[in-house]
Image (tube, rainbow, N blue to C red):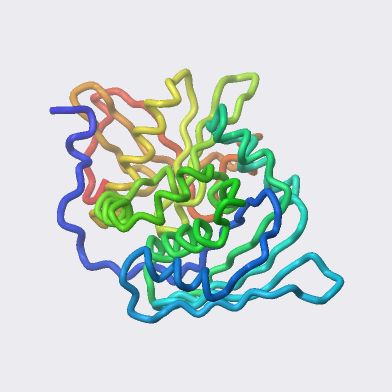
Length: 292
């Protein structure tokens, strides 16, 4: 049995997803001259839509370099505000600066000169479809000026080549079939005198707890654990909470607990919703619970 074989998705049970309204920041090398008709046509060409796109983007005034507008297609209604300036430093600090992107991808993110704020206004689509709608709009609206996107709530980002994957109908089919957590949630490392803390960000948007782990662990192993638990919860409707334990393969035993309120780093570690800490335990401490 492979390390994560037991976490492979099974039939997803019926489960009402919270009505979350995600946002996205689109990074550009400059604010382009927006052609509303061309944007609508390009958006509609990606995959069949039930409701044709309606795009309305314009300058806020004759002497203002900023823009505002909206995009409506299918069940999605997205507000758009643009600024002829880089994204705020506070947002960059917790997205690009803490990201694992290197080389050209990171350079493209850091080189942006303007940005758009996209805010989904809610509606009946699930959270995954809302994020897909934002990614599609970002790829189309950014065009050749695109330098990447930021998901502030998830403390994560994606360079332009990743964003443009959402302009392919085949890629979209794959994303919907096998949700890639790394494109919608964040994985952050915090270094302290005592050691390294690992934390997820943005799980609350999908109605599942963020996860925290401390210790001398390989980052790739921790990320793998976090992502597979996220998929296990979101795709199987499993419930995890303080006191629950799990066994992975033959020699990996873990326990969920609440974050200690006295933890000096709690403000950095806790997510926007419930947050659980994972700790390694011995085999004799393991106990199975429904949904754990």
